Length: 331
Image (cartoon, rainbow, N blue to C red; front, side):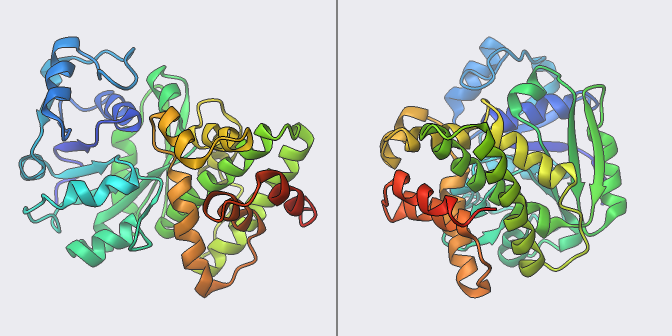
């Protein structure tokens, strides 16, 4: 296997666009798959993504666009997936090309709905990709700040840390610092949970809870995350590292966070559907909440923040009532 070889970006959203900028800081060219041909046409004409991060200009000579997922897979060695988790299966259902010999990097911060599998497990189970050929790209990185070339830190996790090192080196630049890990599952689950906790932070903001309470909420959230991770995937890890705690904090506090924005709208009285329509962007934590809730039925980890968010989003319990009950369980 040649690493990283020819790199493909799978997805057309803001995170995919930021990753393309990140990769092109070192790579001469990239392959880029977008499902909509009209979006590709507009991209080529405007020299920027017509729908996301429109201020980021690209050199069209360095991008090979594809609207057929089989073609882009055939022409690439490393596939970086950056689609919202609810859309992953719809993209892959058209796939007829063998991918078990490709190197897969998932930058998807969500769980595959219905299957309740993290993305790395899904590719191994459904497509036979060996775990050592799958990596996770994560860390406290908002797409908007990467696009502005503000210094950001990412972690590449892979069971084969030598491969993780190669990928990390290929993504490092003047505005991206990289590190490696072998905690694939832990980082994937934490990437899901931090979205859930960001929704909780947003709900509390919408209800006018202040900074003092938000600090307590985030402190309890990292403890809850730690308990879940050591149960679902026992491994020596330090959740104070930026890929866990840092990602939680930036997602819970930043105005760029779509999950916090979604939660704030819910706290202000929006219904789930009306909040989703007005945002026009996917809040991964909405889907992640249900998936983790289902997984935790078997694990039985005490997760009061997760339960509160689930009750608000799926059981339609009043945010005012549910958060008041939550405050009594926090320390």
